[in-house]
Image (cartoon, rainbow, N blue to C red; front, side):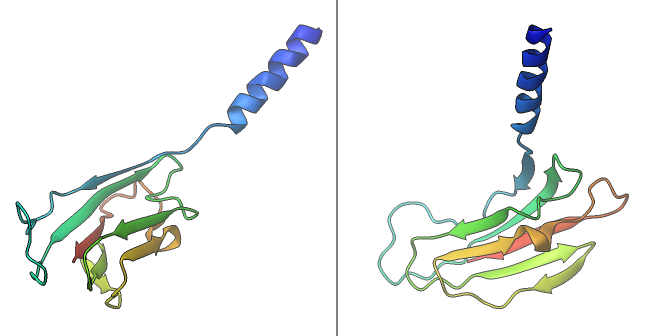
Length: 122
């Protein structure tokens, strides 16, 4: 009886420790130069993030954050969230780090015909 009780407590603790996972697909970036760059060289790098799938039944957990970072001087980020072909651009950002809250990316997953993308230009 005591062993059964301990086993139930152990299984309950294991169940509480389960972590939800999110899988996304990042398209290869275009405009990435090869080799060293001279200071002041202008760059235009673009990529798209697609196929958001969270283990929670949503496209992205609302409590998580999608973060982008660069070591470039004077970056200008252009980010758009695209839902079913409708583009919602965010204001241009001039910081090294850009974050998108999970609240902006959370939608029920598995909805027929629903498409979510994030377009990023630097």
